[in-house]
Every structure is written in structure tokens, then in C-alpha cells.
Image (cartoon, rainbow, N blue to C red; front, side):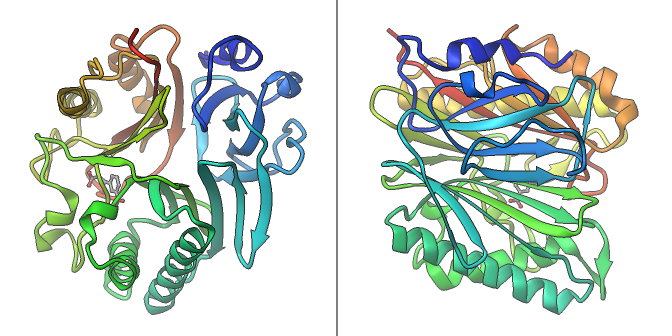
Length: 352
Ligand code: 3EB
């Protein structure tokens, strides 16, 4: 069963204050979307576009990620705002914005020419970074990238490495000092036809974190590609009353090496150790008490092979709060030996 649909009840009119951006998972067939409370930046659907879905919320950005949801009734993710959201479109970019956060989506048709793919990726990133800057939301909080054929070689180099090189060139063209700008990120492989990117950006500067168990991705050795992946392991947005911690796609990587080749359960356990180390790091500098993902996060788990669902799920659910919202999705992961990846959003209430 998908957990967390009951969160709907507490999402709206209660006395709790909400961060300028929060996430609710709801049954896709829910007829209570109007009860979500607040305003909708956008909604994320998983799976084929043709599936029977609830009517989209008025004006909201509707994103369909072509990955199959496993092990539960279909859910939709709603990104919500406590204050009105203004929606718009500029060129290929669709966006929703409130006083503090901008939510933006763009996609382009995948190309089997490596050079074209890189050129379009770079152009897409530069357009997005320029747009965010021009709107006054220059600080990246969180980026998701869904790449068709992520591991497929195109003229001798796989799509993920080409993506990394193009992203690097765009960031380099845009920022004098790269590292402080790098946000929490995920890159997953889909069977869709478009390279989809979703950005969350803020007016004020967030704090980015690295994982003491892992080499920073921007320092990965050359064996992983001609230009390193550019992302932070986590990003913390401090809104005042509440904070939001965005945790990047986290895999069974220690140092820079993949661990537990062929063993999905052991990879999952390694990911949980990585997440413990990462949250301990955040805790130490912020004094926000955090231990792994124990604070009712929204969690996405990407698995390469549906047959691994049961061992992966067993390991994860033994550790998570009962009200955690967990979505299992079948997707490809950027290194062929990695079988599972986890990402999270932790909505941090004031600790008394
Ligand atoms: C890793 O740790 C696993 O290229 O932006 C995770 C999250 C991964 C983000 C990215 C890659 C990226 O290297 C893969």
C-alpha cells in the first residue's frame, strides 16, 4: 500500500503553518484534490500519460514522468504553497511562483546524436538559469532530471556522461564560483521520449551539504566522465519558522565507488548508512535534531528491477516513520551496477 494519503487531512486548513513550499502525496484517483488546502505550484504524475488521472488543479504545472510506480495504488505528488501561486510560461519554461519559491519545468525531445543532445541540454540549462536569475530567484534549491536512455552509448559516450558535460558547461558559463551554487539533484533514466528537468529556486541563499562518507560528486575522478557531475548531497532552505531539507538521489556509493554489486538489499542498507551520515552532518551544523530519515520524510525510491521491490522495501520500511510517504518507482540509475537510489524531502518543524 502507498502510505501517506491520509496526510491530505492535515495539509490544509489546520493551525500548522506551512513552509513556502511543501509536498503532499495523494491517491491519483483522489476526488479530494480541492481539499488539499493552499495553492498548487505543480503536480507530478508517474507512468503513462494516458492513465486515468484526476483533473489537474487549475493553472498548476502538470508533469508526467514516464516511470512505472511499483507496489501501491498510483499516487500524484502535489507541490503546494500556503499563499497564491502565479503561473506562467516563457518560451519552453513553464513556472509557478510565490514570494519565496519558483517552481519551473522544461523538457525537450531526446536526440540520438550525442552532439545535439549535449547542445540542447546546455541550452536548456542556460535558459533556465537565466530565467531564474531574471525573475529574482537565482538560488537553486533542488533539480530533478529525467533522461531517456541514460546508460545508452551515443557515438561512444553514454547519455549520462554527455548530460554531465553539458550541465558542467552551462554552470561554468553562468557562475564564477560553481560549488556554492550546486543544489540537491537527481538524475534518473526513463523510457520516455523527452529529457525533462524540474527546478526549484529561491530568493534567498540556501545551505548545501556534502556527505562525509562520499567524495563530493564535483570531485569524482575522471573515470566517471570527462566533466564531473555537479550537485550537492543535500540542500537546506531556511524559511524562518520552518526549514526544508532536500536530499539528493543517494546511491550505494562510498568514497566514489559503487558498493555491493548485484545485491539490492545490501545496496539499500548502504544507502541508509549514507543518509545517516548526511543527516548527522546537517544536524551538527544546524542543531536541528535529525537521525537518518526518521522525521516523516517524503521519500522516492528508484529501483532498476521490479523483482527487487520486496527486499528493498523491507530494509527501508523497517527504518521509516509510519507516516512517511514512500513512492517506489522503476527507473534506470546512472551507473549500470547500481540497483537502487533514494531521495527525500524532510519538512522540518520547529523543534519546540
Ligand atoms: C552518485 O552519487 C549517484 O549527476 O546530478 C545522484 C544524484 C547521482 C545526482 C547528478 C547523480 C546525480 O553519483 C548518481
